[in-house]
Length: 300
Image (cartoon, rainbow, N blue to C red):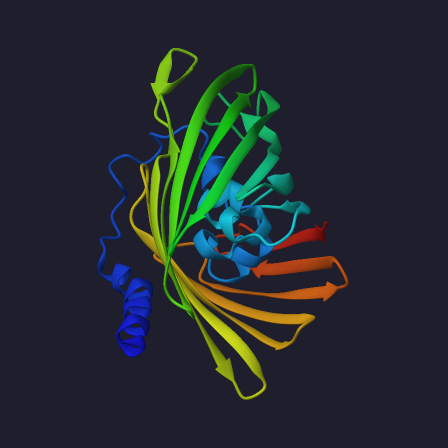
């Protein structure tokens, strides 16, 4: 049985390579594209498998994971994204009886964007763009199922134009075996938003994922895989392996599939007492620059 389930995990990671490379018909149709960026360094180092590897940042990605949080925590991070974009986030996890809860906010900013009305070597001016969101989520365990829901308020401003929206998430995690987790989530469900005079849909995304844990001679490891499909892009996938040779040390490697700008990912996790520091390195092509991501966690 475990052999079959392990094979399913590997299929999740490799079958999207058969998808088309053409430009997707709805490219650019979604607003608030920053929502598709998972904030945590751990998930980023594991090939972008945030569905099951966001840990204390699960309120941003899969609220069902909050049901398995053992303690409360505070997590924060600030990092540069592709190009000159930066991302900052803050999350607080706590429990209310049997319900795991999370409150959080994230902010994405990019400045010095050049404006031109026609082909020219000199821009007319420069401007900035930013997005901010406020999140609330909860998860509960019901037997072998963990269920979760989340809500977020959204605000985006590009130069002098702005838009406001609301979105919802829903997730489930299934524990069919002790060492196996299966998950699914629907993210960014909500009404269209208006920017200037045009309506834009939210980047509705579905995700499927799995994680299999196993022992190695000098530690233990977990193999993860995830498939995702946003409204405005084609199917993509990621996979990663996390190796724990010591309780205070985690080594992470991953791959992103069907991503023209990124493939190999790596990272490390260091723990000391109630503190954990996660780091991820994501090299990018097309002169987008390498991404270094950091997340700091404090257990309460």
